[in-house]
Image 1 (cartoon, helix red, strand yellow):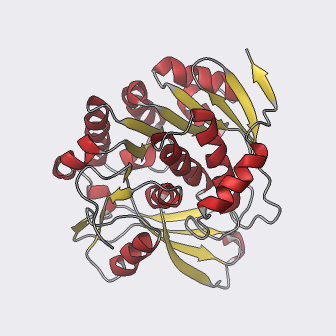
Image 2 (cartoon, one colour):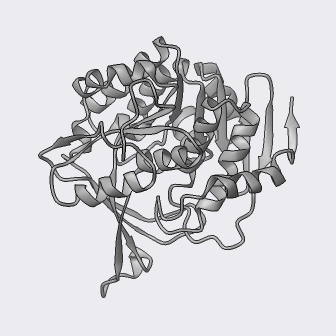
Length: 330
């Protein structure tokens, strides 16, 4: 694919790309072996694919292996409309994970990422991308990226500071993973990132309990706002989302997908789509409506990038639900 000129990116996504092995059965039932499909995912790739599908000129900022698997991995990202020309290589294996099919969001995962290429992400990489960061409209990153290694944590902070200082938008998902980091470390990173964040997307109760000690979506949004985030989107189960825009908090119904297959990556799809539409000029509420619609459609496929919805279909679904607030909170 052709490489956009400097300053041409709407959304940059900083993070890790993973090899995905999707098991055909629940992992607990795999004693006698099970078939698995190889694909490519990770929260950064999922979000970048969604942003590109939503019309944003999107580039991935990541470190991948220099082995044979990276060729189809990068080819898949490019096929999804993501510019991979700035991706760096390292003589380490790509991270990978095994998951089983699920539609409710309570998935089984087994990860292999210790010492991965993605974990070598560093401030030096960020400095090499400095011109891109300064000129981009938005940066999207997550707590997973910051938890991969000490150097990745610093890379996330420096990238966020660079974009923020240049007047760009930052989207951040705490995405707490207890196998990667401690609550204390994740909260410390959040405290530094939140004041720079234009949109903070989080889940409740999982992330909210770990990050801000509450299982109430409205209280979680208020606490994230108190940390400095300008707008907060809290996914509260599969059927509703709470949006706090700084003036008020409101619950919105998530459009129903009548034939769900796998919820992997739905939250990333929401964040990528919403970020793209925000920087392309839509209002926060309209961008969130597009994000919810895209996330709902995405669960029709297996794996994080198994189904990246076409934007025409996202827009059509969002139009039906845009004005259907369940209730407003004072």
